Amino acid sequence: MRVAFLGPEGTFTEEALLSQPDLAAAEVVPMGDIVSVIAAVAEGQVDTGVVPVENSIEGAVTATLDTLAFEYPALRVRREIEIPIDHNLLAPPATALPDIKEVRSKPEAAAQCRMFLARNLRGIAVVAANSTAEAARSLVGTAGVAAIGTALAAKLYGLEVVVEHIEDHPENTTRFWLLGRGIPAPSGHDKTTLVVFQPVDRPGGLLAILQEFAARAINLTKIESRPTKRALGRYCFFIDLEGHVDDELVADALRNLLSKGNEVLCLGSYAAAGDHAARRREVGEAWVRADDQVRRLRDEVEPA
Image (tube, rainbow, N blue to C red; front, side, top):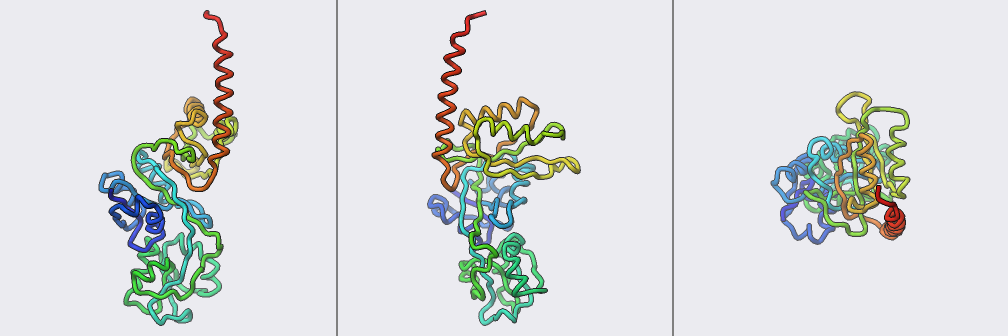
């Protein structure tokens, strides 16, 4: 199996990949940016790919969401991976903090260290890179330039950790998606990600969408609006929910959304990180009991 990831070697995406034994045993293929990873999976150059989707400090990785929803809607999320993120300030050997005149990093990583940069490197230019590892690799042969990245990247590219743990909030976690084709069987501990487009913009439109899930006790773990790319002021909603499309409760909510004219794209039903399986199972069992009671009642209806 060939697995693409946001490279080069030494990124947090690679760390997420290596945390999964089956992926760590595969042939890994570093790519220069998120879009390239997704395109490689869609075009069959690799079997699967790992991309970041959300950070606990800075929120959604919009390049991942938009590329999947608007460019490659046939791909599916097949697994969720979460890892803690520990940022470090990296520089060539013998570089001290006062020597640094420029910092390079992926914009999302720099944003997660905003307060550190403001307090310790105020006024220093922050230059964007496609990944933290690319930023680290670019420091080879430079002077007075630092990067935000992993301790692994420091080892790979002959750098030193000038300051460790520079993220603004210690509980820094990033969520990643494993991409491929098809929907894996329910694991009993699943999430589903939908993109919902309203047929018209009207008062209460979002409430009507959310009520479909509330009425079935389906817990939403995330909701985010994004431009539809179709017109200014038109938005769609990315929704993460507990459960699998093979669950009758989730399927029933989808049927209702579609029957009311909403356009619904399922990005995937996949094994989730964390622990929410017990509550979801209780809700599902209650629905089965209710469905059985209604079915027995309908069996009493006389033929016309």
